[in-house]
Structures are given as C-alpha cells and as structure tokens.
Amino acid sequence: MSRKQQLLKRHRRNKRIALLIGVLVLIAAGVLVAWWLPLILAVLLWVAHEAWFADHLFYSPKDDYQYRFAPGSQRTSLRLDAGRLVADAPLNLSGDETLIVEVQLKSSWLGRFLDPAVELSGGESPDRQAFERGVAGKRYLNLTGSASALAGGELRLRGRFCRVIGQPALWVFRQPDLARQTVMVIAPHADDAELAAFGLYGQANESWIVTLTAGEIEAEHYQQMGLPKADAARIKGRLRAWDSIAVPRWAGVPEAQCVQLGYFCLQLPAMQAAPDQPQVSREAQLEDTRLFRQFNALALPSDADGAPTWHNLIADLRAVLLTARPEVIVLPTPVLDPHPDHICAHAAVVEALQGLDWQPSTLLGYANHLHDNDRWPMGDSGAGVALPPQFAAAQVLEPYCRVLSLSQQRDKAMALGMMHDLQPRAPFKRRVRRLLQQLLAGRGPSPYGENEFFRKAVRRHELLWVLKRD
Image (cartoon, rainbow, N blue to C red; front, side, top):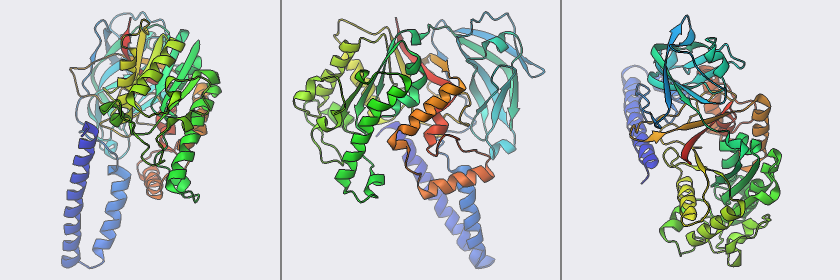
C-alpha cells in the first residue's frame, strides 16, 4: 500500500470515528433536550464540515515544512522593515533566478476559517500566496519574477489572516534558461504535460510531448450517454489520445512531435511487476494498444504486435528518445507525486535511458498530485505557487520555476479546456461543497472552468524540480 493510500485509510477511519461520536451526541441531544434539535444540529454540522473540514490535509497546519536545498544554493538573510523585505547585503539578481523566501507564519483566529495568505506588492504583478487554515510554522514563499522589486527594497509583504514572524531568509537558485533547448515532456495521461509544463514547452526552442497511457478508465460521463461500459471506455480513450496529439498544437508543437503510446490507465504498475506479461485494460476490454495510436505520425517498435507489456513500453520510449534526443526531459517525480502511473512513468524513463549512448543534460520533475495535501497549490487561479508541504528533510531538492504572463496563463487555461477529461461537470456533492466554501470560507471559483485543475494549474508560476543537471 502506498503512503498516499495509508494516509487516506487513516483519514477515513478517523472520519468514521468522528461520525459515530457525532451520532451519539445527536441522539443524546434528542433524548435530553428536544426531538427536533438533532435534525438542526446535524444540518449545521454537515455545513460546517463541508465549508471548513472537508480538505484532505494529512498533517497538522502547525508542522514546519522541512526542506534541504541542493548544495551551492545561495542563502541570504532578510528583514521586514515597515512591511518591506530588505536584504542585509546587496542582492545581485539578473531577474531569471528562482527565488524562494523562508518565513514563519502564525494564523489569526479568522485564519482558522478563511484561508491565510501572504500578499506581495510593490512589484509589477501583485500576488497572494495562500496556506493552510490555522497555519503556524515554517513555509516557503515563491518570489520568482519579483527580482527587481526585491533587489530595490520595494517588495512588501502583508499577512492576510496571518502574521509573518521572525526573520525571513532568501534562497536564490541560478539556473540556465531551459526553454532555449529541446524539451520533451513525459505525460502519464493526456493533460499531465499541460498541467505541469505548458508554459515551458510552449516557449521552448523545440518540444516533444510523449503520453504513456490513453486514460480510458472512469468513463461514467460517456456511459450516461447510453454507451455500454467498454464502449464508453474506448471512446474516452480515443478522445484523450486525440487530445494528447492535438492540444499541444495550441502551443505550437508540431503534430509529428506528439506521441501517444496507448498503454492502459492504472496498469503500469502491473506491467512493471511482470515485464513480459500483457496487461489488458481494466474497463475497455482491450489487450491491444494500437486503437489508441491511430493519430501518431511516428511509428513505434511495438506497433508490430500492440502488446501492452513493460518491455514494449521501454522499447517505445527508447525509440522516441533516440529520435528526439531532447536536452531536457520533464517527467513526474515520485518524491512528491504519489500517483501509481506517475511513479511508473518516472521509472520507465530512467530504465529507458540506461545503456543509451546519448543522455539528456537535464531532468526536471513535476508533481500534479501530492501525498499530503489534495488542495495544493492553495489559493486562486493566477496566484503564485508557494512550495508544497515537504517533511522528509533528508531529501535534497532544487526548485526550478518559470513565470507565466497573463496571456500565457490564459492560453494554458484554454489548452486545459480542450482536454475532454476536464470538461464534465463535477458531482453534485462537490458542487454544493464549493458553493458552501465560497459563501462561508471565502474561496472564489476559477474564472476558467469548474474543474479543480483550472484553479490549481493556471498560475503565474510553473514549479518544477531539478532531478539531474550536467
């Protein structure tokens, strides 16, 4: 069982215990006070739960984030002077560095009900980076793109429903502009490349998008159209295969440089465990990947048999890598992303690179899911992306961040809007929960779409992680 599954299991167990205690309290209120009181209390408790306690947060907001940055990272002490961030020594910044500020935050009492945030002003683009309700610990603000205001002592910090306490510290990461190179994004599913790196691959000198699976499962939306389960899964997989080829054209990536491998969703772990054994689709009643490869311009080694095996996946990846020879590969990082297909996608690329006479100069990791916090990145569409929760201090990390202009954010939102998997309406319960959170917790909707990924991914920052750099 993965750590994410263990955390979910513990969370559900605790909720069941809390529910049992609540039911006993309501019964006691009905017996001792009035029969109608439990009905009113039950409604109020449910509303409170949906508004303030429905987030999947698997740690205490009082826990310090624990980061150990890569050796050679520059650390500079800062101080708050009348709300302005001032460095103890002159800052020599060119403007394209990744800038992270370590702060201590303390939530106000209102910050237990409304999302605490740090507001940044004085630069070209005001920002607001949100954190957990009730936050009381070490956090990391992302100031990438604010180098001029920071170096000039013009950048202001103000806590909203929280206070910045203690002495901040600035971490500076000086990195080359990777968009000046050939970039390949590895996407376990259609939309992963857009969520993680649309800005980067849209600005790169040359880009390739390689999608590993068709993402055909969980096709209830198509079953509601009257399709049998297998047919619904097949049409969903074909649509997402089309998305994986067509949507990158919006960012200028040629169709010939978008490749759909057509393996089956959530079957990569089983393929890895038995490399020679084909793993059929869970829902589409398919044992041949070629249905989902019909839009490819590039021939793949396993087109000969279409067998969904790990060995075929590695052979396909090697063929694409040697064709494109990207200098930068962007792929999921299992350090932060617990999705089983994402973990296996990382492992597959690492295995495919072994023994090749050509190697990329840089590996960048991304996390479209987290172990500890399903709402991260917190805050609204368009806001900056603070560093995610991290509690393994032994892990050395190096953030790499790119800034997206408002027009680039809108292009990214339109790309996500073209993805069929993000188009169906959310379940009724989730829509009610969001309405209650808007009314009672002050959380605004994304202007770009209803799906949660429009809020999470359409931001002024794309945050990636340097896994390897020559």
